[in-house]
Length: 385
Image 1 (cartoon, one colour):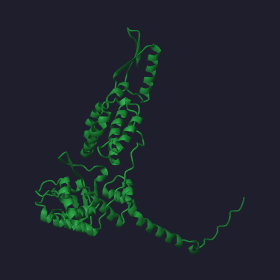
Image 2 (cartoon, helix red, strand yellow; image 1 turned 90 degrees about the vertical axis):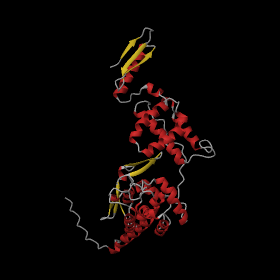
Image 3 (tube, rainbow, N blue to C red; image 1 turned 135 degrees about the vertical axis):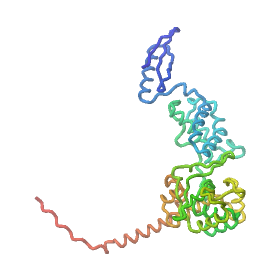
Image 4 (tube, rainbow, N blue to C red; image 1 turned 30 degrees about the vertical axis):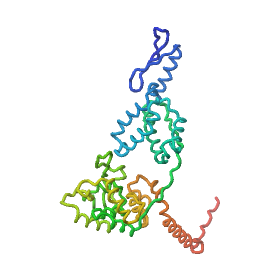
């Protein structure tokens, strides 16, 4: 329980303990005002609505430092590095010296709008909607944590910030012949890697982390249980980006045949944990180096530009769909948590399935039409009692 206390200067002090047990106080000119504040504070504590007024005076930069010190331990390295980049480049310059309690929703909306205005955010241009969205989410994470910690009474982040809609990028899918053509134009050391990527749908970091014992030759699967990240030049093998990213991927025989030949020719020793795809000198294959030094050159020679390694993942998705994979199955194979990404990116590829479904329903309805149904005898009506 709290209490009020008269001060030597004639004012009255309300004193109470916050939910963490720390003694708090506030001075008032009149005793009844101190008592009223004390009662409302105790009710707020009982109902879990207590907010520390001093928390709102904390500068955004100070709270962000605290937040990211903890976030570093739970976020993936790539996510942490990306968020810190946005924080230093765009968030702190605007909000660093602002007290948490002084950040209003209207001010946040104006800031987001300015980030997307041509010439304001980036010299000579504008930030892409995707970048503005990433910056906003970085800012929102910090403010949400401040609200959860009781530093601010509400999150001053609009539900629908003024961010322009992202332009839909055309998704590139290779035909099987183009996959083969690309593989013929890359360094022979990575020919099998093209087939595994195009028929398995792995992320580039997952490809670079595959090992010999990840291949289930008996069942034709490849297991994904780690990925390779390259952050600030530091390589690290880590768990996949989500629980659903731990998965087994069914592989086409052709890709497994290419992989078998690759292992026989290029993977030395009998270590079952040896990497399937290594750097030319035998070390760990850096994803960015492979893209810049080998993949891009092969794309140019094959005259398939523009093409990225991620387009091989899209290619695998299109091939799985063509052979009957439904959205849930595809989400599992690609390592997505649900089908929203599948619907957004690959939904149009299911049009053939929808048309086939319509045709089957048409046949079913026609075969079950009135003319083809044997009429059942009408049951006698029950006699009234």
